[in-house]
Length: 158
Image (cartoon, rainbow, N blue to C red; front, side, top):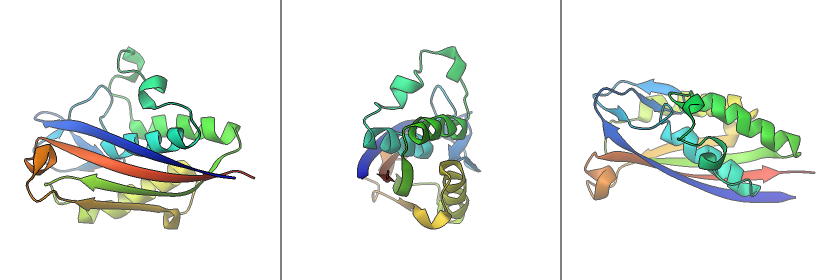
């Protein structure tokens, strides 16, 4: 049996915050605003995983009204999502994610993001794809106001 899920997340870029994507701290003058570490890549991946097996979304599991998640490491939240999936007999077949950001340039950081996500999802890096694109200066991502991510996950169960 296979299931497919789609995840989408967006966060505003602000000063005085770190930019964390896929667990990688990317040097940049802005970071993402959010209740947790605002790792928009990991958030979209988690939503794709949860969506594939109809377990809601990250807001359901990690509400931004709960002080427990203030400043939380999103990779640790991904660990929890994986426990939910594995208890139900699901495993990741593959994940494909696209980061939408005009800047900063992310190419040199993508391999580590891919490695971090693969490790937390208990799969090989060949089962995870992370890429980045700009929006040709259009919209909120193109103007540098924020970063968005789309992710698709294929889950498998015997």
